[in-house]
Length: 67
Image (cartoon, rainbow, N blue to C red; front, side, top):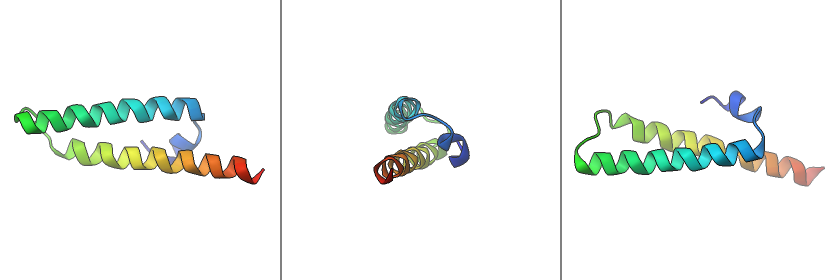
């Protein structure tokens, strides 16, 4: 998901997306350990998405504190 798309979302939506992405990451890691994961690149993609979401959330918090 792109940062521009994330910035358009509300904080509640971002937290739901963060939770689901973290769950997907945990499932992918379990699949990798079990040898069931076909594409290990998914783990990196989920980690980067989580970082993007957390960055946008902190930007929104800082923006609210300034006002």
